[in-house]
Length: 379
Ligand SMILES: NC(=O)c1ccc[n+]([C@@H]2O[C@H](COP(=O)([O-])OP(=O)(O)OC[C@H]3O[C@@H](n4cnc5c(N)ncnc54)[C@H](O)[C@@H]3O)[C@@H](O)[C@H]2O)c1
Image (cartoon, rainbow, N blue to C red; front, side, top):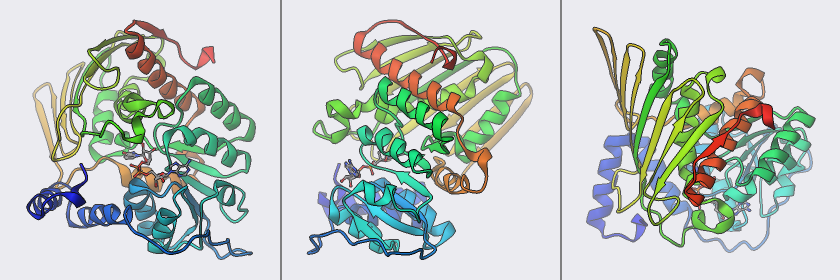
């Protein structure tokens, strides 16, 4: 829903609710991001990059809502004015984001950023079909790359992306932020401490997206790649690496293959996970998500990345955050740290396996068929 077009009463209610959920600063940035998407400029042409180095060294491809409110915001907040070049196919967005975060230049041509010798880190925050193509080009130029989710929209892209990482020793991280949230990290620590197979159950109410939104375009991958990938990825990371594959996927769907669906995963160690994704009316508080986990002596219950209850035999641990933390800040800033800390990079195994599992999930739902998914060994 476009809140900038709603009556004043609804706008105020939304802002008040968001302040309670996300805090004052985050709400303000989200409001600014909405205005950013509508800003108009008389400029008709890109601004050329300065000839030499200015000390700024980060590039951004795609200057929409998420780039403005999360990627550029968290990079700028922590590391200062380090953004050098920003690009969007819509020049107005590039100008607006570039001005707000003091970039040296804005452009509508991705190659300006990808071939800029003074940029060593590129954040890819554009439409889904372009992610892997931009990433491969940037990896070939020796840049470190943060790819927003989903990193690929097809198996062909996944194969080419992994091949490029291997051939050029690419440094890559993907914008799967939930495992890097405060409660996500805590939950994983407790889950990993238990042995035996796990039982995981997600209930997610997705926010309403208009039928003509670009997420639904054929080439962009729909909501399985656009949204469900978050919970597929986090689920995979909660299963020990050696116990994951082969995975058996069982889909349940009704009219659509990517809304109002449920999919179950049977992992190699006998762990079972189910993700139920409901997408119906409007969710005023954004995406709502609940996870229940049972493993060994642990019973865990996570709600909206704001509250977590852990029961370990007789011990009960409760965590309640002031505001929701989906891990965006850590995800964006860890990608910056990838430049100096190689351990922050994602492994090819993870990039392949999480990508392959989400692609196979989409296939299972589209064809209503049970599918066996193998791990990296078969790549
Ligand atoms: N990690 C998360 O929680 C999270 C949340 C929201 C969005 N995202 C991701 O961020 C990305 C952007 O989403 P958004 O919500 O900002 O969407 P948006 O529609 O607000 O912005 C997308 C921007 O990309 C631009 N664009 C379109 N095609 C392009 C191309 N080929 N090259 C460069 N720019 C292009 C558009 O003009 C627009 O400005 C998507 O990959 C989305 O999945 C991640």
